[in-house]
Image (cartoon, rainbow, N blue to C red; front, side):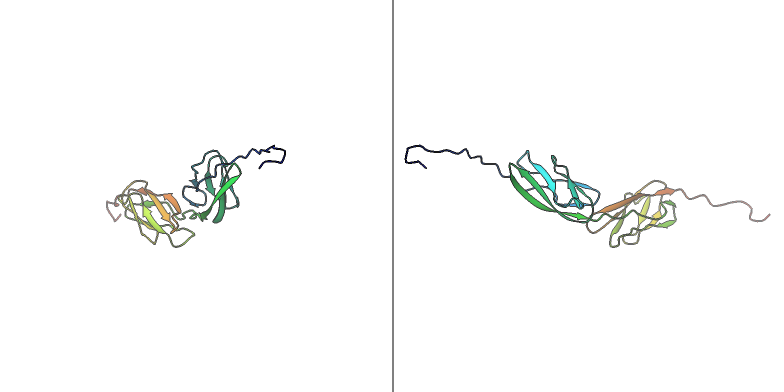
Length: 173
């Protein structure tokens, strides 16, 4: 644009680099973290619903607080990109006795139904896939895991003790 006097006004225009798509897993269990990232470095992260998820502003590390969704934003130079993060409820603490003798059973349970059970070492203890019934096999400390359909887990370490030897000797006095 040129004025009739021949003078041409100028304006300095700054074009900011737009952030790319947010990368990383946009699902996390309550109480755990997930790492989000963006190809354009130097921005600031934020969470719209901090009662559901919090995010470290400079790093993109998101912590699930409670079940629900939150919009996670990444802003650089006034430009913002967002993603919806889902926080799945955590499995509750496993309850029941965590000590069993080899050859005996204990019952474990979790307050949220629908999950499956597994043992870290079937040679020490087995567990019913849907029942939580643990059978001691050999002395040791296997970890029993309860996994919800969402992938959220709870664990308990079970102490498997060697069964005492049979009582021997005279049975009459």
